[in-house]
Length: 57
Image 1 (cartoon, rainbow, N blue to C red):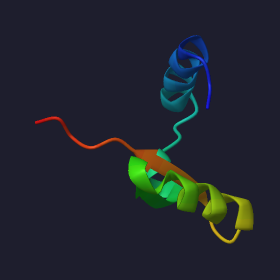
Image 2 (image 1 turned 135 degrees about the horizontal axis):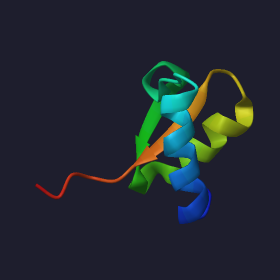
Image 3 (image 1 turned 90 degrees about the horizontal axis):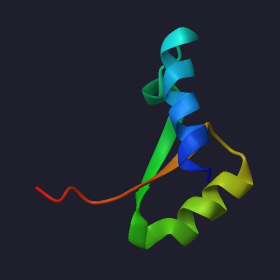
Image 4 (image 1 turned 90 degrees about the vertical axis):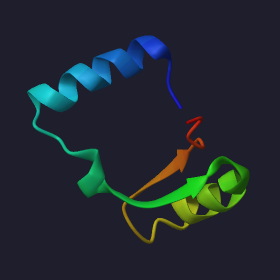
C-alpha cells in the first residue's frame, strides 16, 4: 500500500530503472481473496504478491 503521490513516483522510476513488475509478481489474487494474498506474502515463499481488482469492462 502506498499513497497516490508515491505511486506516481514509482511509475516514473519503473521506466527509469527498467523494472518489469510482470517479472517480479509471482502470484495474483482477486480482491475477494486479499486475506489469502496477505498470508502468501507473509510466508515469503516466492516473489511479490498482487491483489487485483476485477475489470469493469
